[in-house]
Image (cartoon, rainbow, N blue to C red):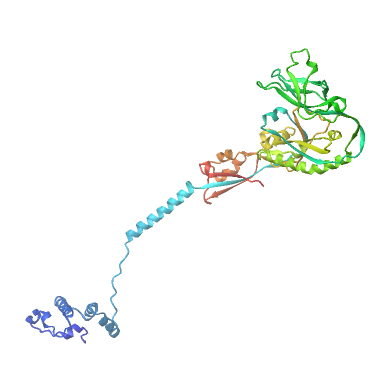
Length: 461
């Protein structure tokens, strides 16, 4: 066999013992450099200790000469010796796998038992109740102002009107006065036609009975009322005056009750007067009415209470006053009109209670008025008896009532309950039409033990 080791071909070796002991570093004359000589020496020392067969020689020599190794593989077809593979440590892999599995298991447990939640969508029962009744709100409820609130709004406007010709006029003067009670905290009633005498001796009367409130501390009670002159004529017209009550003369009340003008007393006339035609007054009224109503509506809206209250526009009362009587003697000929509105706001819960008290439904059903869009409010008939201070209105329609459910109580009854028990628990609440739970995550089979993770959602539609 041909010797394929180039190092062996360049170094002749003697068979004698002395030749083997010769230092190879001094006998290598053809070596190209010192490094190559070192390699020859090392190889020789290795051959002395172990006899190599051809294949072993080939493998050994290939380690020192990659070029020779490649050429030999191509010539002899010998299989190369692959370097040993470095295997991953199985122990490290097992620890990593266990750690990942533990983390995933912990996440599963936390998500299932700590962060799991349930949303319950509930459709409450709805019922339509026909209504056609007159509701009387006692004055005491209005004074408290928690369930019914009456808001007063007013607006005044004027417009010039022409005077047309002369006519014979015989009218009594009238105006508003303020009556004072400086006697005690007890109210005092004054009957119809009670007289009031000015310092000039002119007599005026009230057209209806009134009750003057008592004192509040040291402040006299007071009330505004319209008075009419006892006789016709312009001499009863006055811009300001003070009055006593002749009926109290000679009593301790004479100096305790008195009155003063709040507005001019006017309109008294007798004989031929230059007047404003009725059609001109009506035209002036129609001209400013729209603007007055806009101002009234804007003021009512600005004074509206919270959203818990319902405005009853059809039950709002309006009082209109004008100066058509004054136009008889007023040389300016300016028509003035004032509208005062009393708007009623009623709490939804209070309205529902008043409607249901005339039906077969009980408070135990806990019905709540869902919407007032189906209701029509109005003013009662003129012959309806109304106590002073009460508010009366009519209501008709078929409003929708909805069961008022307690979300907190429902959630408390579902704590720790399994899916199979859910339907039975929902039967405890008579106001529920339909209930559907939504578990998160989906594989959870029981409700959480914490009500904070149970969401009760009442569906509006």
